[in-house]
Amino acid sequence: MPSASSAASDSGRRVPSSLWRDVDFRRLWTGQTASQLGEHTSLVVLPLFAVLTLHASAGELGVLRAVGQAPILLLSLFAGAWVDGWRTRTTMVLTDAGRALTLGAAAVAGLIGRLGLPALLVLAFAVGALSVFFDVAYQASAVRLVTDDQLVRCNSALEGSRSAAQVGGPALGGALVSLLSAPIAVASSALFFALSCLSIVRIRRIESIPGSSAGVERPPRVWRRIHEGLRFVVGHPVLRTVCLASAAFQFSFAAMMTVYLLFLPRELHLSGAVVGLALAATGPGALLGSLLAARLPNRFGHGPVLVSAAAIGDGVFLCVPALHGSCPATVATLFAAGFVFGTGGQLVNVTVMAVRQVVTPDGMQGRAAATITFVGMGLTPLGSLLGGYLAEGWGLRTSVLVTAAAMLLSPAVMALSPLAHLGRTLTSSRDRCCHCGDTGAGFPADCGNCT
View (tube, rainbow, N blue to C red):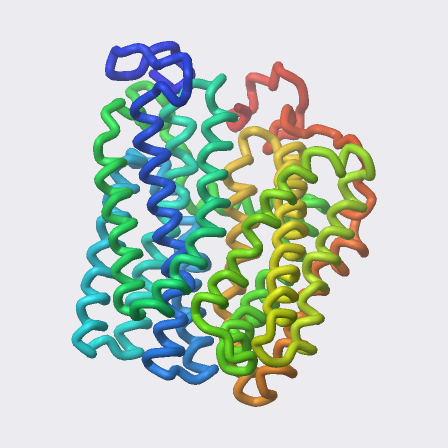
């Protein structure tokens, strides 16, 4: 079966030796960059539209965020199985076109005053669902599009775009809402998705679908593969801890962010542009966290770095409830808190990914990642609902304090687990069969599941 690791593409033409001279990769990168900008812009624009234009209450904002995050819980595992059986270009083009049309229609409705909260809820769910499929597809497309020796550089470029979008998207969204209007900001997100669709649809390399060639044994059913991934992660002490710590963080972070998005404009009286910039401060911190992740675990140990980075990054928001007014000192403190949070969060993310990849066999990599994402991100809708409930019942300042303190549950879980004792070197399990347990390059031939 032809693959991206071959010297020539499926269309018969030779793949350029330089990644950036590959026109198909440039089209993928351009489209993914535009799509990420649209996604991260909309994550700020839609809540600000609800708060500033529709005057949504804290509970309504919590529901809006929960509805937008619900597709992660409902669709992430199925999105992985779907993408494995479809061409990733087709999936990315359809999802981008869908988001462009949906947001474009919403912008028109907003301009004529016809976009109410019920329609905004439907919009948030649709955009969230399409984003789940696009994010899975673009990560899978790299393996199918470039050669093995280009894969690291390809992933670096794509993830660099995502980090840049995390910086530019919220800032751009907040600025557009503040300087123009919320419907215009929604239209800008639609434009980004349209540009992404136009770029990705021009990819010409014929893409092979794993397991689609004649003579290849049909893979196990989706439910069986999902069950195997769940059983493996639950049975592994390190990965089980990663799941629990991720779930604790995502739940409390979703609650905190729901309150935070209300606290900044209503309690501190900050403009939409300043709110966007405060949220964007996590981006430069994430870049620093990526650099530190290449050095600190090998010097101090993976476990100590994980616990320390999580405690510092998550605990920094405890200073936010003490802020008052929109003076320069308040804004500078918010920027600093976002930067520290971004640094600690990215340091944890990269280190956890390295740990997961090392302790997981090759045949279980995708399912382990999907399971951890499903368990961790699946609780975010409930966290958003809790944040809205607390903001209405306890007030914004108290709710920020409580939810920020709850974020420290994640480093506490890691500190009390085997994950905290991981040293500077990790024992690899990537050559272990995830079914029969044998190791080495020569798995037993009688194990039908060994790969």
